Image 1 (spheres, rainbow, N blue to C red):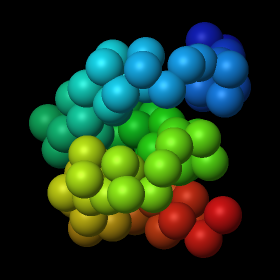
Image 2: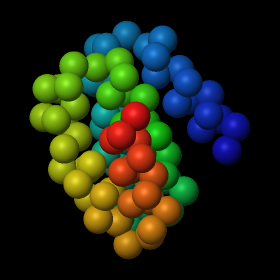
Image 3: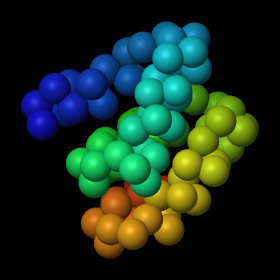
Length: 88
């Protein structure tokens, strides 16, 4: 899980162009219900990190469907994590 922590922490130092071109795609892929619970939790953490750095309109346009999906996830821990991330 260490690389995941570093990856999430690096979001705040990444240029916005890299986030929009690469990280959002990665996040959407890892947040898919077919992915493991661990990957979906990573997606929650990435969304929270990106939300602190990016324009809220961009977050809504690019990630709103994935956020809703994570809030309705089959795993309680994923739903809880996404909901808590939205409050931060």
